[in-house]
Structures are given as structure tokens and as C-alpha cells.
Length: 270
Image (cartoon, rainbow, N blue to C red):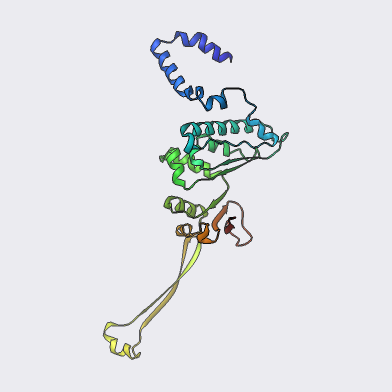
């Protein structure tokens, strides 16, 4: 507070008129949405809702869908998510060990640069994070497709340890998933059978000797091919409510197949 007062009383008046007008214009354009409904009622009036409520076992639901409220809904949810992150990082998990969760559907709409920073310490803060999105390309479009945006996206996803991949037609996502799961040593059998061109009469009667060869190639190949993600069942009546997924968790070997990934099937309830 003292820093703000010092700036407004001493520094701000001493600036040139043009500089002050730019600062005022920039600031008012940023906070203008908080002077109008619905954000004014939600954030700038009396309320009993604080992010620390989750530490008492409460569940905070942000019912401001982007399809209805547009940028206001997006801004308010990003703001609440950021406040929650900062709040939960400040608590002492040893003294207040209640586990909490952050569940974000259409997470690409609310992704920021702070997400990957939060995920690096979310486990020690006893926060379970669930982010849902249709494709990796959605994150690239939000965080930027350049090297900086790609690095932020890869860092975020790298800190989300368990990943579920459902049916997907996005080639970028499928290639990324196959690469992350990794390659293994695999063996492919090849065979060849040939005859000389001038020996066809004898070949017709099966008397000519041909050349037959066979072999085994050892290659490092994807354990899960990218095309497999395009063939997973998507549920609904067409698939009798069955939804397929490939589950991956780094550092764990599933006892069913001894690998870090496992094909699973969920049953929808109609």
C-alpha cells in the first residue's frame, strides 16, 4: 500500500502529461470490465467467496461458460484459477494437508504462462490437476506455436504425469503421444520367393528351382503407432457406450503388460 501511495502521490504527478494519459488509458482499458456486470458483482463487491475456501473442503465452480459470456467468462475464470494457484502455493501443506484439486475442461481456453510454473510444485502443494483438451494443437494455438510457446506447452504437459489419450484425428497430437510413449526393439519377418524369367514353362509344372529367402529385421519402432489413436472407440450408441483410451504414466510399469502405457476401456452410463 505504501508503494502504491508513493507512486500516486509523488511519481505519477511528476510524469509528463502525455505519459500520464497513456498510463491512465492503459489501466482503465484493463479494469473497465470490472466496472460492469457481471464481473463487478463477482469481484468488486462484498463476497464470502475466497480461494482459501477449498482448504476447508469447499468446491468452487465457475459457471461462466465462454460460449455465453465470451471474453468476460474467459477472463474471470483465468483470474480465479490464478488466484487459486497463488493461494494454495502459500499454504503450509504440512500443517494443512487436505488434498485439493483443479479441474479445467476446455483447458486450452484458460492456459497461461503461469500454469507450467505452478505444475512444477503442485504435487508438494497437494494439488491434483486435471486438464482436458481436444488436441495438443489447441495449446500451441493458445500459448504460441513458436519456440517459446512450444517450450511452455511441453513444460506444462511434462509436469502432468498421467495422461489419457482418447480417439483423436489430430496428427500433431498422435505423433506427440507416440513419441512420448517411446520406442522399443521390435522384430519384423520378411520373405521373398522368385524364379528366373526364362523358366516359366518349368515353373508352370513346378519343375524349375526358384530362389527363396527369409530374414528377421531388428528395429526400434513406436510401441504405440500414431494411427492407433485414430481407431479408438468413442462411445455413444454406435459403440455401445464403450470408450477406449491409452493411459500413460512415466516411472510406472503396469502389471498387466509390464509397460508404462496401458489400453483401457470405459463404460458410459446412458
